Length: 212
Image 1 (spheres, rainbow, N blue to C red):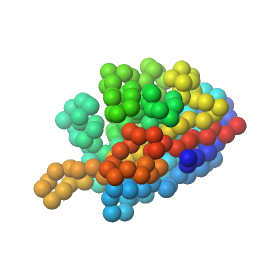
Image 2: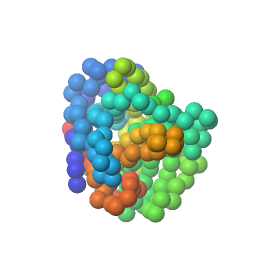
Image 3: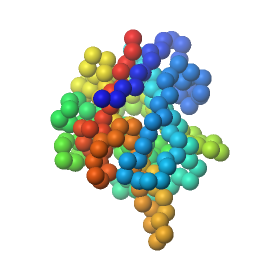
Image 4: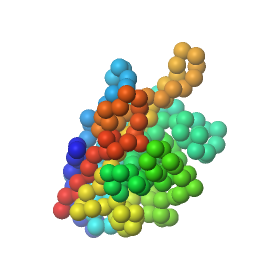
């Protein structure tokens, strides 16, 4: 299983309000090996970083893409699902029973839901209140989505085992086709080796290893 090592930081030296600042991430490893196994076109560069301390897990996606599509008709599940976004899935076991999904668009709209195998989703479920914080920004070449997730919430959901989080790291990219419709390209850190795009499968997860 692929691993990404999450470096530890001193909580007294960092301020979680600074998660969009580049200096916050100086100690973080930069993960860039994202692929779209079901699409022949090259994917735009994605940089994923994570850090942690005894209180929080911090994450940051920087996506080098300026042709970003957001469906702004409302804040419904369908609207977020039809938008460019980044995604983190956390599982409590390799049976995916259960797992938890965070899908975040570039304006920080969050689709958080509880899931069971075979794509059984509970969209009424929400991450523990006040235990997740999101920020976003953009520049002339990219957009960034960053967040803070409390260690307490990860432990309450039985997601942290021996300082390991079994995690899927993904992106959905929407592009206009020849008929004027927006269609997704599915991008993943771990190739699940499926014939059709599918993130909701055990083989699409890797490990975030929280280093002491």
